[in-house]
Image (tube, rainbow, N blue to C red):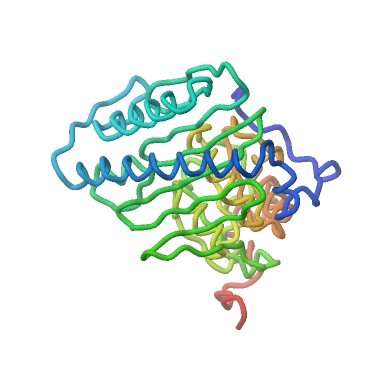
Length: 317
């Protein structure tokens, strides 16, 4: 039985190589500078409160429940999403909300928010500091603002259409951009779970891609997208995701100059697979991921994918 969330096949002939970059992202703006920066200001203020809640419970006694889909939720997840919904409702009663823990509140206007109270809940439960609150604002189907706040790291990434992408750490804020790496052999490729990518059947060329790449690492959840937006990696691959996982990272990566689609090359927030890149490599990464290996490559091991057994040199050497 076909998975209804499976990506449509990648069609190289119809793929638009121009649909990315700062100017393209700025053209997606659906509101004035004042509106977008006001939404950003609200998101930043809410994240200040959310950070305090997350840190209050981190590495302390946690109440952990199992949801019907067998994923975990803590009292911090619930408290943060309740806070976010309350703050949005108070300031913008006409805005809708799509959240991981409490579902969808429809909008009476054209704007809705996406909320992931704690992205990286498994990390949070195990005392690993790689977790974040994700907030994003959408108008008329186009994402406009994104905030990724990681309090245990002391870092926050944020972006708005036409305003660029930024990171705040150690009390300083700076602009960030994706890398200029232009070949897979020089690229660092990230992914959330190789077993999930393989078992989906949607990326038959996954192993070939990571064997070709200069370096590959499993930096999952928000962390992979943040590294990509800052130029620390060139591709991030993930399957089994939800709109609240993806909305904020989309704005961040696109405003940093990168590109985000599903494995079929189609852009959207309600997809089950994601390929985010620095833009320059997007077509090449999609083609590599969706190309089935030959029988010889499938049985010959990593050397067949790279053409040699020697390790590749890092970019710039």
